[in-house]
Length: 233
Ligand SMILES: [Mg+2]
Ligand SMILES: [Zn+2]
Image 1 (cartoon, helix red, strand yellow):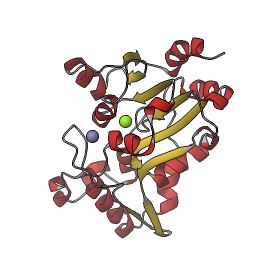
Image 2: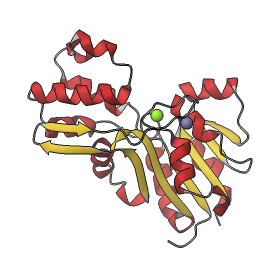
Image 3: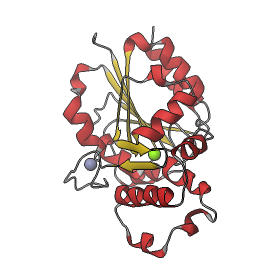
Image 4: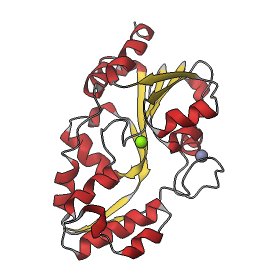
């Protein structure tokens, strides 16, 4: 690939899309999350928990197609359609990736529905296997020993540093909202920007522990475009 000036990294749930993909599909259960048997409560590892949830769907005859259609209702975060159009216009200068603790099936289903597949060069997320029309099996992306606020199955800082040399880029822009977006923020340089969704966990974490890079707080993708506009010519 030709060398690009910018690396854009996106979280998925509550950043690109308005909702959390993992919890949105509880809608398919007759009583939402309450339909899950009590032994689900004990599972602290979210990735394992989701594997069990999808097994439960299988045993309750909720099909893969139903899950997919449900996910495809989720709207993009306000202004993100416009933000992705802006990225498309400048795609010759931007390498664009997703790092998400959702999974390949959920993300692909939504990107396909929203015609966004062309925007992203690579997606780092938990792998999924579709066994048959009713069974989805989800696996951890990797195992990490990160001491920060990352789950065992995914440290986004490790994903980035294993695959990218930040010094190859003029500027790195990271878009996120959650607890697991803090750790990758710690490797951003002072010339980089972290775009933080207002009103979510990442905003609170950053206020407690400062990061070296520029912080830009947003409510809508339109604010992000306004910050980015003058970087392109
Ligand atoms: Mg998120
Ligand atoms: Zn980490």
